Length: 420
Image (cartoon, rainbow, N blue to C red; front, top):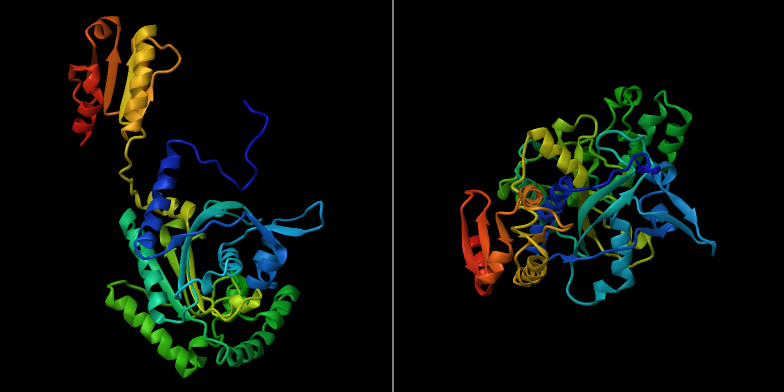
């Protein structure tokens, strides 16, 4: 056994389970690619200040959960705890907002890192697929992203998820609500750290998961009662557009989420089969983030969906994805000459687009056929000295057990026809 193990709070993706993760990523990304979103990839680490400004200095993510490091040159870097700030930074740096019509629509997939107490569904290294629409203030964009996430989950076969929806207001109405909320919170019995948070960002207190705090928040003022007319109209249109697409949602006046940059629309995807870590994804509008990190005004909206939590949700519902076998054909040579010939034939099949594997290691027929069975291949190609003398191979259907000779020059075409 190896001396080393994966760090606490992380996981390895290995076959065959890794195929499910790949399928989930593809299912989430597919609706985005069909809707004009282009792929973007950013570094796994960024300047610490990017997250301090964008995510918020008072958030748990920045104060407690970021992995930070100092380079030999003295730069302060952090492993990325979320994707939006990095994607917006990259878009600004590349001047994508100046390259053509807005919005700039981007999607991404990658690993993220937070120092948290590990438990099922909450890891220190986790995977997300995300989408951002940068540079346009339009309720239809908010609705589009919610619908695309909904469609992705439905395509995977998930049914028992809920969409929570709220509005966090804007620079006009939120300050009035903030003052009212602070007045309410200052009268509660809170610890020193939470009292400090009341003064810095009181909305974060609404996101507190401790029962002792939540019990005192029952009568807290609700932001929806303080929304300005523009925010009310904006939120009403988002709700109307989602409803028109047949997507069910629940209004949640207490939904805040854990990042400072959200404005107006905010939403979360919840799966009740996951216990305490029930959020499988979420997002919202972040109209002021570009200015926070030194860019121009670029109202934007986006989301991130957790790949690992989506896999857990599939398991909770008992959904088994219909995954194709890793290979379609498995070549079994009997003898040295057959090994050379079939090795070349395997290359031809792969060039023709047929997923093909080979019985490496000089296995005998019995062991090689066991390997063919384990591979999940639909067909096996078997050849020995007698077959090669007749310029044929034996093509065996692994499901029916039927076997027939096929001329060497016709194998590729015969396999493609049968697989089609």
